[in-house]
Image (cartoon, rainbow, N blue to C red; front, side, top):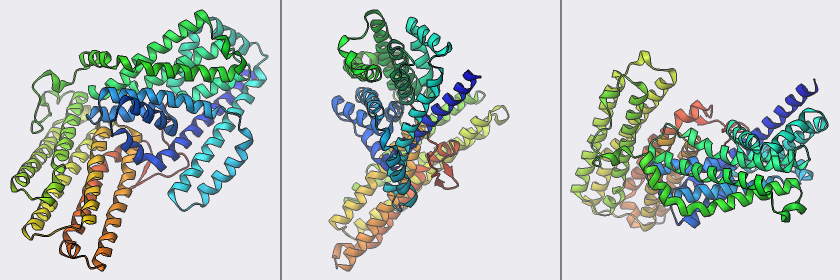
Length: 558
């Protein structure tokens, strides 16, 4: 009976911890989501990318979330293998530093966090303060969950079961290591797994040696999570998570063997068991950063193991379809073929969107004609997709496969509609501006260029979400719809102020400015629809808006 009561209390504590970690991350995603995506999509030096990954993991409370974001951008070519891997390794260290902060003894602040967080969340009208309240409530619940965990373990410390289990883990570091890996994978959160281990070891319920093996195993389990979640993605998306698993996994196995053979340095003894465990975790992930020197050899290895299909033959132009009629009878292969075709459509639209603002500065009829021809490519692709989808054996498809088919066809329609807006609205507006020798004011053109740049960036993000089915990316992408609408509204108000100020350039180009901004916003509305099926599947989309419950139902990741 005592064991049953313990298991019930332990399950409650663990689930509360997972809920709290998720709640904090959801608040941060909603407050900073678009900025985080822009951070990933701007590749820099490996050292800078490590620092960015470190900060992002601390913010998102998940190194796996950082890995999935990077994987999505790597799949679309927006970020290279080495910078992407550097960001992921930095994210692993960021997650370790976060655990250090969350394991500090600040329980006295729990009532303060609950009171302040509750007031901000319930009473604030502005989005940023409301999310700040959500974050404070989440931190308070993490501290409460850890205290509840210690209280759940306390009654059985002197029973026959826990000491026997602790002694077994201490003798058999391999079992402890594999248990830590399994816990991190099943819970989808190395942060929660390691916080739980630190709490139990800190109170003396588990020996330090067993705790070290559990923590190192959790590092391996955390690296497996993104590999598992991207298992059906394109090779370019899978390489960075696999490289992280290779480096982090081999390092964790090596560290576990060495520590079991030689023990921990005596310099760590004064810290106490809980603090020592945190220090080992941080030291391990700091040492793993040095393994970035093996990035190039690993990239070559993974290119051989996971070659990009395009690299096995002559590079296919964007005008060549990826639909393979030979896969019709095998739904899994057919859907993969269809997904590649929709990604091709996104690439074509990106190519069309790139020179648009240049046409507003200097109209070029040849470029405009090329863009019109590219729109015909989108039209043809959509027609072929409809025929391909109709030919699939719907009676033999699983419910999930049918749902994926609908989502892909719907997004193909959205991309084709965006292409039509570009060709049928933006190009005529650019031509009208040129023919009538109209000019934008300097501020007006900067506003339109910024809007165009943001739409282009989010199209790249949409492509990465299409590749990886990344929930975090989908949520951030849909939140960008509101930001783009605000940008368009802000530009319109600024334009009207310039008209009131009597600026001649603004008078002449007024209609073109307003229609261009509105059309870019409308294109963006089509582009972000890739996020709808992902969010709906996870219960985060209510009719046409994002769900806004206490946690956001965002899945915990390690």
